[in-house]
Length: 300
Image 1 (cartoon, rainbow, N blue to C red):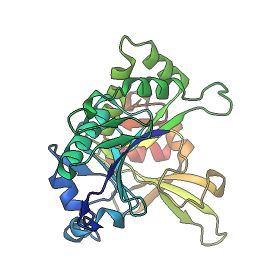
Image 2: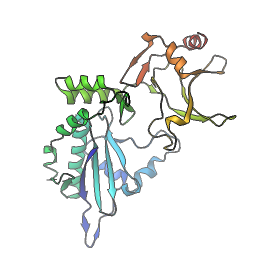
Image 3: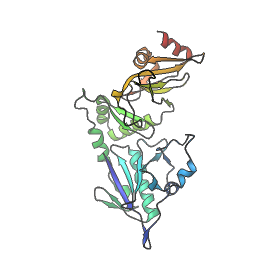
Image 4: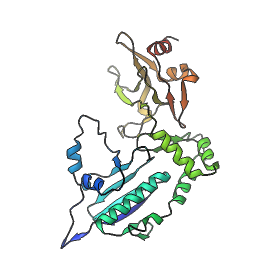
């Protein structure tokens, strides 16, 4: 679910104006925007080229503000309709909505065009801030489906840096808060901007059987976020499902440079409870382990 807003590309004589480049989309913003679609630290990422490309070269860009955004917003350009689109997810945080509406105001002001919402309402750069987004957040939180807990144990929202999982207990706690919208926003913001390492999911193949195996690596002396029970994450090969994974493994390096592999369930069962905490319904934050502590887990 989401709500989208549209701004027409203005005409110049008998044609439309050139589509804004990525850099121009950022420059017109009155906020310190960041993009979360691509890893700018990847050695293959060409930032200068990325900035010079027109927005229409991308299906969409996920934008937001560091340390503030929970889910961000999508910015895109439709060449058929000649419209810029800002899409806000349901539910999003209070900050997400404030950031998106301000960007819509900046974009509408730069293009000298009105803003049309998919609901049929029309706004200007000066009136877009009057859009009442709070019912959408409330409805989005309330509609998270936990009626049959045998079928769904947790429900994931994808944020700007990592997924966040809700279960019925967390959802109900949010709804029972004096300010449910602020409580949801706080959960999203806090889970997105933890100053720790999020372990990267890796998928490999057994050389003898061809079976697929899921891996996570754990480094000593590094606080790390891991799933309590791993499953295929958003962004992996869409043709791979949880049923395709024969086993999950946790690996870490030893003093002699060799690697220790533990079945993931074994690793979780041996974790001292004082060494981790749940940050949501599916992910745990591990305190930093020493090499000796990791070695001890392997031999218990």
